[in-house]
Length: 286
Image 1 (cartoon, rainbow, N blue to C red):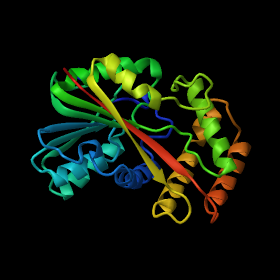
Image 2 (image 1 turned 45 degrees about the horizontal axis):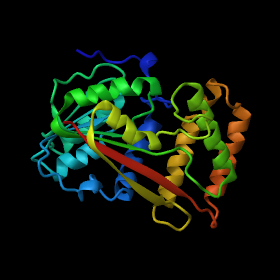
Image 3 (image 1 turned 90 degrees about the vertical axis):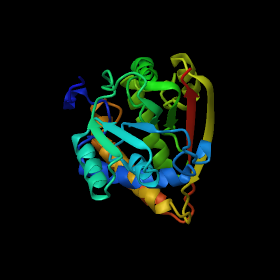
Image 4 (image 1 turned 90 degrees about the horizontal axis):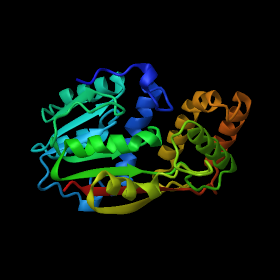
């Protein structure tokens, strides 16, 4: 039986119990799904043949709850390390009368508390923030709980979203260096996270067959419909990451405060241009 994780177990760079982090993830979930073309865009949002889904590190449960609402015939389970996130997801499921959705506190760095061959689809979106050395063991667990013929689906992005903001570029550089320093980056230099080019090989190494991937691009330049939402998200996440960046020694409070102010001003300029790349990879369990 997997025990509830302690705060010391958490490798997430923001406080997972933070109300600000929850609010950020609630908003982010919606526009990321829209930007990716729907809940399961690579299948043209076709859920036929899928009866039970697991959403790993589900946060406040947005993706899982939307599936449960639109597909009442599908059972959806979500887990997260944060008790606050799970309490929120459970409350939403209860208010919406979604008896086909359930949520549990669980730590993805430990054996997952599900029987073998439990799910038709095991989904993880922005979940590989764990140490890179642990990812093979984690994906082995994903394979164990996926039914034969089922799918493991991973969606990730690089922190280095290209933009015309010099301060954002500097901030992203600090994040890359910090993640490299704590062993949560595949990049040889620390300039990137390096997770996107690894997704297919990680799934293949885990034993998946028919591994494929699809890319999505979201334009959040000034004047685009998602500009304000993305800028709010980035401003919040970078502010919440300040203790992590300072704690691992890649910056100072003075420097990160200066970059934060400059970045927020640059994102509001009429000539601000920026895009975000997202990659989804999936494979089949033989």
